[in-house]
Image (cartoon, rainbow, N blue to C red; front, side, top):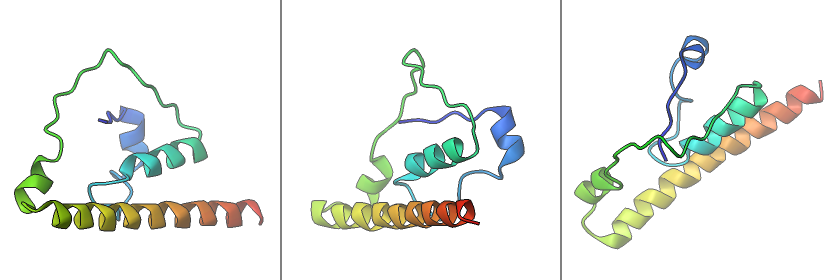
Length: 94
């Protein structure tokens, strides 16, 4: 999946949410977009060439090490998303 940011997003936010590394950013972006009433759009006509896993494959030649790297970083992204959701709930309860 590739994400293209509008000028209004770039003006409102200073890049991506800090913390996630390589995996899970889309779920965090989706949560923030919904939380902040931003418009998202899916366009199947847009084609972006992307070499999936090329960085990870270069760094980790063995499947087990690659899988551990993926799971560690994806779990970290889920923890960040969970914290954002908890923060949002606590703000709603104030």
